[in-house]
Image (cartoon, rainbow, N blue to C red; front, side, top):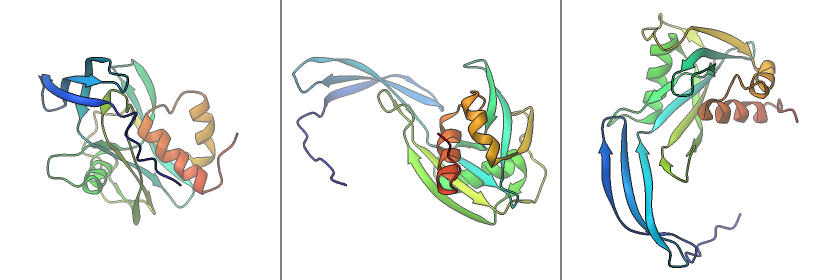
Length: 187
């Protein structure tokens, strides 16, 4: 793969100022210039890094949480995860959130993707991990974030995605990665 280092199409940032700041997000107004010389202000939202886990058991099932998201007023299946605390490694966050939300620990654990879900306006890194060999070591301590959790057969995941029941970006990236590497992707 060839990486193009040509900067002739790069936008130039002349400066930015914070217009909103709290522990969850920072909103900036950036003074940007396009390669053709057009200059304007562009909103930029910066969020803390999120880390999430696709946890698979020995029966080829994935642990999913049925959750309501008030922002979009939708229910859907999600994988465990949360925001990285200051000074915390994303791997630590993913394992901590998995334990808090489900009570499980994986026997093996690896990072499979790092991505930006809305690269044009939002700066929000997402770290996706896959854990296998699930062992329940405790009861969940964070019980207000979901209606229920279930072990969902990996074979059912493509249909759940097609029906719009799995729609969060981290869940989609993680689950599609697992399916692709296990030969389970269907057209």
